[in-house]
Length: 159
Image (tube, rainbow, N blue to C red; front, side, top):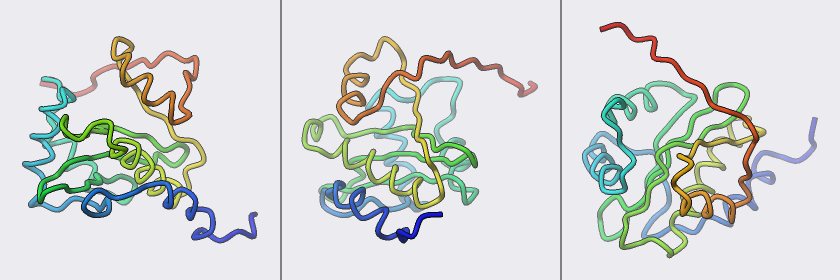
């Protein structure tokens, strides 16, 4: 067990996450429409994943959340974070197109990482579509590497 307090462990992570007009905070009901709008603008939504359901599910439990930062009074960046009891996962990392290359994407990732570390995550993972090379390069600059595994999935919902 480490003698270093949680605050001491998180200090370097939090210090690396500059806020835009404000800090990354958990979204409220009033933010949901702007969050979905941002995700659609950034091309993150898919017909088979209802973003409203994803937001509601993430906000329903203590193991997941949606964080957002604002610029000019609007939601400018988001990151959904979830802890499965073993690993932390990042989803829906988005930055308004006009604010890209400002450090806000990095800040979103670092804020979500801090949220996950505070809940016991020792490893953080994410999935990126292989054709999305710009985003692969972005995460590579943040220290994320290919984990040399294949993600498999199967729908279990009935009609």
